[in-house]
Length: 258
Image (tube, rainbow, N blue to C red):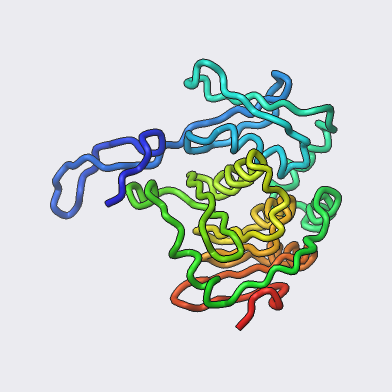
């Protein structure tokens, strides 16, 4: 079994039934992180510790906040991260949080909010279907293998080489960490890249991919109806149920060649 990074897993006692024996088991760490801008709290997310600066930057970028840098406090136990950003419309961002966290409130309003923050993805990237089918298997997930409790997002280049992988208890956090890494590496927008996630495809993940300018989003699981609608509107190729050599392409199928 793979060894998880020490910040991502902790040991607890578990009773194995029906044998009734007690053993130590590794579980994923989940702790709150308060994201601050200019010292003022903006949001709190439940995350797996590690790569917190990337998480904060990716979160802000996904919400249309023009973040420039992020820093951790001297006391890491404080579970805070400070982001530097010029003036922005805090009220608009708070409305966006409400829309994205209230799943059935107003899908149309959510789509309009994303349209303001993310241009349609104009990328001519094409990828063979056989390569797309292999991507989930290329996600190296040591923390998941140790705990069974984390999601993963991998960033691949056009040839299918893994360039960044992040794990987290929240699938949206894992993607934010990758986007934050890409920002720090000056790789945004991700016009010639592929994002692959280990779970299902929600509206929120498609929104983050759109803001990052990624043309191809791949998942092991299923997309939601709003995820498909947003991907179609943003011209993102959405691939779901990528497993066992099969690929379901829901939008912009011309990017996946056979």
